[in-house]
Length: 97
Image 1 (tube, helix red, strand yellow):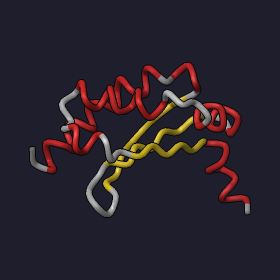
Image 2: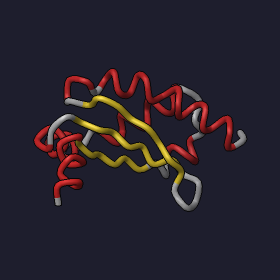
Image 3: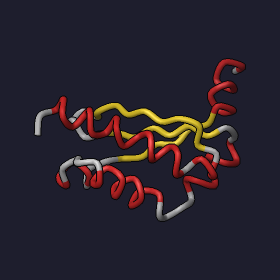
Image 4: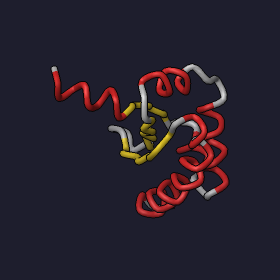
């Protein structure tokens, strides 16, 4: 699978991933490859409390990995994926400091 195919599969996985995590305050998601090319999934919640709550959930990474697998991302890439969580509230605070 080419890097473009992987990118399209990860993009396709973001829609159901964000929808499934909406109850946890996730408003949007995107991804960027890390230095080795593995996807880093970025999820954004509304508040810092939602961010903290979601970060403490042990099921989050496996859920992201299952969603990626179901949408055709190869297992060798799925196992290397990282999930980062931020919040709109925390990002707004960056500009105030």
